[in-house]
Length: 222
Image 1 (cartoon, rainbow, N blue to C red):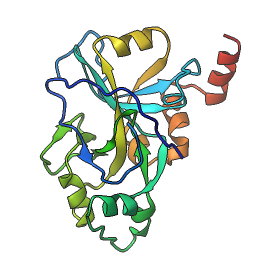
Image 2: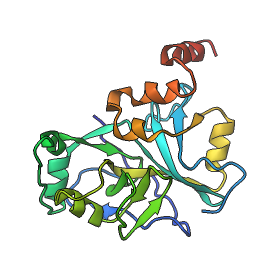
Image 3: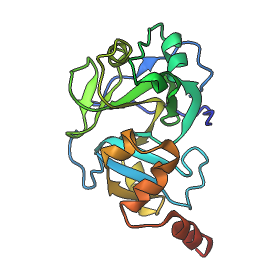
């Protein structure tokens, strides 16, 4: 389980969604087209990624423009579960028949920026007060009303909750990609919402036809 550390916060960018909803009592610390636009793509950390926060990560990129990029890590669970999250933000969580596992579903570590705040990836449908539609299959909401809907049993059909996000300033992500820090591939929503957490890294690599063991071995010979 991931226990995030403090890091610098991302600067506000025009057109970006507002900051995520606050999670009281947590111990967690903290557009326009560009030449490379990887919104609705996965960033897959290469073995050369030495930052322990991002090593082994799959990031779903929600925004990417000339001012920077924003995404959330989808494969690093925290030790917080949905029932604990709902208790912390003073919401009830109704468990429908067949949905008993929802209360023990892990909340993800979304990245080292604003880790005391919540970010929700979900299937588009209802409109929430702070939502951006990334694709026909994935939206990002940073307002509490989406969880109010989930708690009431009428929320999105598929969703993933994270604490924190990952942010890059102008040109930073492009530089990291150019330095072979990340592989990129068009995202598939099934990996976000349906693939088990522990299998998401391998599933994302499979979209590129890459065996994780081969990738690791190649890094050893770099």
